[in-house]
Every structure is written in structure tokens, then in C-alpha cells.
Image 1: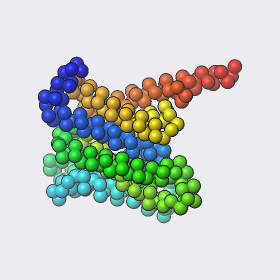
Image 2: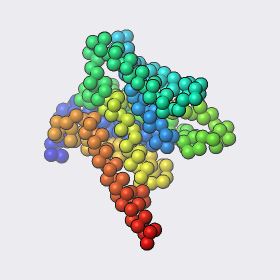
Image 3: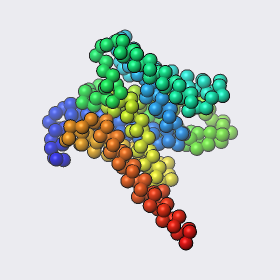
Image 4: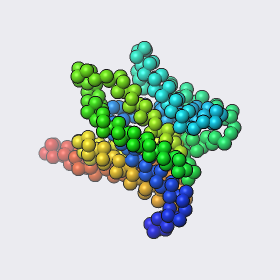
Length: 284
């Protein structure tokens, strides 16, 4: 079956593009996911993923790239959440819930009213088999920008992720850093929509980082592990998708869930078995 899988992606160009796109998304989503986990922004990732849908619909009407429209609405949602958080006494999770639900509802109404080639199902769940060479180029460019962002601002990301108060003491512009990070997160989500869709992209961001968090306490190792897990899960998920005719996004996410579950149980120091043994030794 493995040989057939490689024959398919070599013989059929659109299959090869699908696999390449899935692996690229797996890598860049996992890379930024490491900092999403550390900064406690998992809900924000979910909010942005839903908030970009109106942008997709409007860009369809205007005849512009989905990337542009979705990015604008993702950034708008980020700033709306930040503004309301600063000006009100509401907790952030409540604000995120209100904003992303509102944007998502607006997107559903726009798509239902426009009735063009925009397909709600592909926006929500992705359609990796329709990925073009230009889509792969866009994902690659965003990936390069993200890696450059992480390399150039690694120390700033490190400090602001672990201790924002200390970052302010050092004179770092934490608010600017926060919004720059959210902008990069928005770009990753937008370019990943066609591969796994708005609903499943959050899992590709969170699951590899959560898995690697269970395996190491060192950030550089965590980033590298997360990217490796993301790429491997994308490849394995695409294998099951093409071999057994299953939805590609769902196959990738279930692969990630399986890897996370195994790691959660068997991780050397943070796994459930280790914790049970450790508690048992303490009692004795």
C-alpha cells in the first residue's frame, strides 16, 4: 500500500501537490503552535480561524484573492478582541467567544446569500485535492516569513511567552509583539484553509505543540519536535486519506490525536503511566 501511495502522488500531479501542501501546513502550523501553547492563545487561534470566513466570501464578490480578504478579517478580529479586552472588564474567553461567533455567523450569512463558486464545505473543512502550484507558493512564502519571524525575534518571543511582566521591565513592546504574533498566526491560518479548513486548522496548530510539550522542557527542542510531528502526521494522514478514500483534513487531525494520546500515556516524565508510578512510589 505504501508503494501504491507513492506511485499515486508521483503519477498524479494534483495528488503530489496535495501531499506537499499538507506537509508544509503541518510544519508551519506546528511551528507557530508552540508559541500559541506557551502564550495561552489556543482560543484565539480558534477565533481567528472562524473570523476569516466573511473575508473569504467578500473576496469572492470582489474578485480578489481569498488570502487578502481572509487576512483582513482575521486581523480585524484580533484587534477587536484586544480592544474590547482593554476597554471592558469582561474576561478574555468571553470576548473571544462573542467576537468569533459574530464573525462566523456573518460569514455563514454572506456565503449563503452570495451563492457563487464559494463552497462553504471546503471553507470549513478544506479541499486539499484542489491545491494549485500558486497555493503551495503562498504557503511556502508564509512559512519562510514565519521562520524568519521566529529566528529574528526568538528572545522577544521567549520572554513575552513566559513572563510578560518581566518583558515590560526589560522595555520590550509587549503589545506590539502580541499583535505581530497574531498577524503571523492569521497568515498561517488563512494559507492553511484550503488544506484542512477553518474548523480543523486549530488542531494542526495545537496538537503537535501539545505533544512535544509532553516530551521536552527545552523550547528549541519543542519547536523542532512539534514541526517534525506536524509533518509526519500530515504525511500519514494523507496516506490514509488517499488509500482508504477518507477526508484528508480529518485523517490528518485524527493522526495527530492518536500521536498525542500515545504520548500522553507513555511520555517518559509527563505521561500518565509515569505519573501513576511516581505517585505509587511516593505513597510507599
